[in-house]
Amino acid sequence: MILAAASFLLLIVLPVDFGYVWFALILLLNGVGMGLFSSPNSAGVMNSLPASQRGAGAGMLATFMNSASVLSIGVFFTLMIVGLSSGLPSALHNGLVAHGVPAADAARISHLPPVATLFASFLGYNPVKTLLGPHVLHSLPAADVHALTGRSFFPQLISSPFHGALVYAFAFAIAACLVAAFASLLRGGKYVHEDATSPAAAPTGVEPVEPDAPERGPRPAHRTAEESA
Image (cartoon, rainbow, N blue to C red; front, side, top):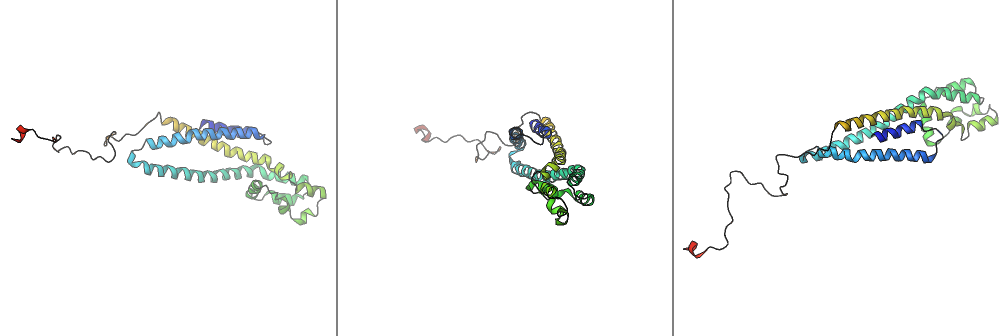
């Protein structure tokens, strides 16, 4: 978990125009950290349970993991929208006004919910043409229209607010990883639950001997002549 937290910290300090090699190394560090935690943590949970309760324990473990995975998506997008709401309106307004868009239209577009901008960035789509509309684009010079509807204007416009929003999400991820690391530390050393009511070395399928049953020795195969007499 500490390695995973370090990977999220490196993602925060990674510049916007990062190189793929560094990004791949950080993702590798994150995967190694998560892998080193996931398997021993699952084994620790299952070993702490009696054998008769491990089926229910496995179900509860899977339920918690799946619920946390779904919940984390909601938390991630919530933090992203909160981060975009703080920096995107001003960046969008200033960028549109700099390319000749009237201040009223720029203010109207900049106050739109950032959800559309967020998903447009994930889809690689420039929504400026749709947001401005043909009546605004026809009133602008051709050079400004080409710049506003091109492939570089929208990514460069939202890069700084988008990075700021990612900081919120990665900071939450760092805090969650450190909490998990502390909880794992409190678990202590290796522990394996042993059920005292059942003998550990008894083979499967052998019925235990009743305590009040009389002991019976082995019956001899053949009796001697004196025993017969």
